[in-house]
Image (cartoon, rainbow, N blue to C red; front, side, top):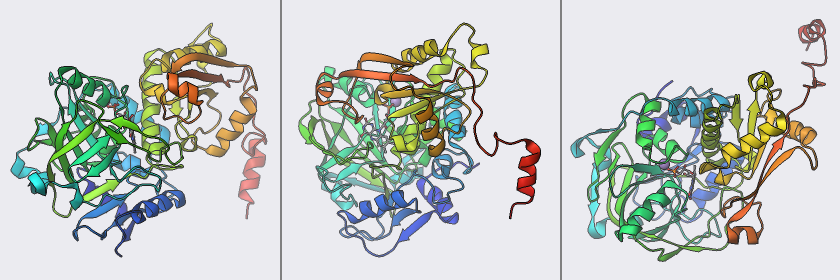
Amino acid sequence: MKYYADLRSYIEALDAMGDIMHVHREVDGDFEPSAITRRSYEMQSPAPLFHQVAGVATGFRLFGAPASLSSRSEMPYARVAMSLGLAPESTGPQIVEALSAARFRPGIPPVRVSSAEALCHENILQGDEASLDRFPIPFAHVKDGGRYANTWGTLIVKTPDGEWVNWSIARVMKVDGKRVVGLIVPSQHIGQIWTQWVARGEPMPYALVQGPAPAISCVSGIPIPAHADEADYIGVLAGEPVPVVKAVSVDLNVPATAEIVIEGHVSVTRDCMEDPYGEYGGYLGEGSSAQPTFHVETITHRHDPIWPMSITGRPVDESHTLWAMGLAADALTHLREAGLPVKTVWIPEDSTVHWLLVVMPQEWRETLPGVNSEALAQRVGEVLFNTDAMVFIPKVYVVDDDFDPTNLREVVWALSTRVHPVGRRAIFEEQRVIRLPQCYDEEEYIVGKGAKVVFDTLQSKRHLHASFEQGYLQDVQQRVIDNWR
Ligand SMILES: Cc1cc2nc3c(=O)[nH]c(=O)nc-3n(C[C@H](O)[C@H](O)[C@H](O)COP(=O)(O)O)c2cc1C
Ligand SMILES: [Mn+2]
């Protein structure tokens, strides 16, 4: 187990295990880097590091697929695990468990270092010099409304009273060298905090951080509770405080080892059009909406900075690995806090965050005397659908632990044989619906309400599998294995 304190040491570690594809030939600055990154997701090949992008200074690099599935198929979650300081061989459920366990430990606040010690302050650009035009910012997908200047970076904002500092990922689109426009979802923490600044009529200071320590990127992309600082939680995962430095022109602390930090203020009105953007559900974007403008005032960066990107779309990319595991850990935490003896929670990558499996241990009936599976499904829905993070999840399955929830073949087999066509489900009407899950009708998106469901797939009596492992006596199995050629 090793914690990577900056993006470069993480990339070096991936390189040492054969999981980096160096692209030395010049790529265009428009679509080629994203197309290569997309193809690398779909082929599960090494993560591309672009050494020369047309239109930007030599030395300015682009890095794709930072936390998707590893090309080392025997350790598929190595990129996520290593980012979080866990062993590369960690299984999905082990990562989910680690993320949930860290929620129960006291936070470790960041430490301030001086500007002279902060790598992210090696270059400080202000005024006209502080232009996004210097950086390699490609288009992500062909139908997008513009170049996306944030797909994997951390937005840092804090409440006007200074009590709560939030680090999160939300996409922002480049308008020009000095302006970007960001999608602010009201239920997300950045939305909750922006609303407080709007109420005061003051522009919100922000820092957009590209390429901090990989654990920072990962935690920025997953839910922890409102009013909790992601920095303190990252300190727990890292086992040491995150080094931060005071930003140059706004009153915010930023991760000291980051590749690039963009500083400025966010407008108090939704004054700019954002979107379309190809989303995690796997479809190219349609439509657009008015969102606030982020003005670029100062940019600081390391020498030869690396700009990371996640090119969301059909599975599997960072939304389906990291974000899904973070949502699963959040659900697991809430269910356990509600006293439910849940073994694990898993969101299959290929469901693009539309299915969430709640895995019950064999002995759950003894732990919850008098509760039948129908009542359990109802309780699971009551707990989950009241949390902010589950606004993204339309369909929950309560399942037995007699199959591997991370193995898609087993998931399809178990669900197709255990979901009743019409019965055994708890339906929750009038739930919050936002425009990101793909399965609702236009009228439901307009009113912002629709149904959610918890399928009760628990078997009243466990059926044995007609498999090699369960369908034959031990001595026959052993003889077969011993004589296998
Ligand atoms: C690659 C990636 C892209 C994301 N893009 C967005 C986005 O554009 N808007 C958004 O609201 N959440 C987005 N998310 C999800 C949020 O980062 C996640 O819900 C996180 O919990 C938000 O932080 P918060 O809990 O502090 O609000 C993205 C996550 C990942 C991993
Ligand atoms: Mn938060």
